[in-house]
Length: 499
Image 1: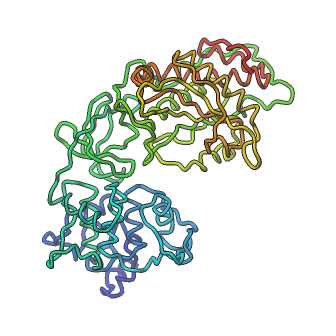
Image 2: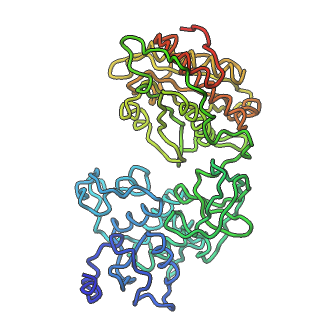
Image 3: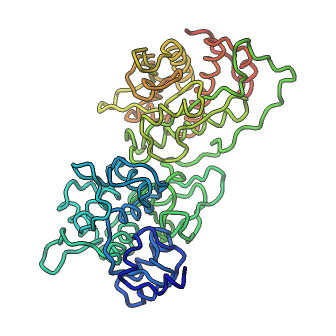
């Protein structure tokens, strides 16, 4: 097959979808050292974003279709390209780009037509390219003209000979490769004016050094390593990867290993040493499932493109994930299981968070959030539960009890203003299938609250409190005396009955 592919004519090679090619080639006979897109094409090939139509040919003059563009953008953002059914009548699960198309539509990066079609084989125009790239890289352009202006200002694209952007002209493989590579890596641009004006600390959570890579993905080679605790400067993001500068070297690192505050020596990166087991563990109460089958679902609010509230130099999505990970660590020393809706800086739909509890056979659900208000004086802690209504979460009494124990332990941990336990309409608790609460741990907009919430020690203390709240719920509300030995793993005691 390789010999046959190498002999294909240009017209036959054009039948191979752009984005469904071989990624093994390192040299193309039609992309020499003098080709206008040589550097950009090989850069994308190195990252597995695009390949040749055969082992020796790239065919840079072939036009790009909408499904091919979707595959390239999807790979750039490290989306899951598994083929699947889509909302479009003309994109079945057999289309090589179907997984990327549906995900890009869900994220608002690409769209279909009013008649319910996507027209995957339509050629891509320069105007469509500008708008898709603007959305994918969050340039905040709402029209083709503003998107084109952004690309030209950033040195990603230029106008054509007649002085216009040429938005109706179709694109060739080589040209699209240039525009995409420049969008990913500012070093390719004709006017690199990106500013590395955001500082982060590196934290790999296990003390190892962090690899800096040539591009946004593990397919790209490592160009250096950065020790935990070092400050790096960031310019922009490509999906979950961040373009940074460290010691005058520029490259990409995954956002999961960056945080706004300095990692402290007392940060829990592995569970505490497991205590000596109780030689006479308490039996499972009648009618209850064993503790090993109890699953606490921990939901770190927001994530990915949804940063949540912003205040005092912090992002809500980072704080909630940090607390959630610390809370999860406590369950590693007890029979109860913990499952997290997200473990990295990824975007998850609210419906999927609510459905996750059922998917993993969850027992209770706790969603962690930060509050915010334009008036910086607003402060304190509050916990929400959902009251029962038709076709929604029927666990009102259980949820209210869990909320009371959650609120109590948060107040015990931080001593902030008590804003109470309240009914709330939030979707993640409303449409859940198990007792569920949403904890607003404090106000990101308030300096006093952030004095606790913004530190590793403060977040560790709260995570311990949330862990204890789940034990309180099982001990007092469900009458599970078998959880009593679990308090000793954190030198804790039951709170007292509150429901």
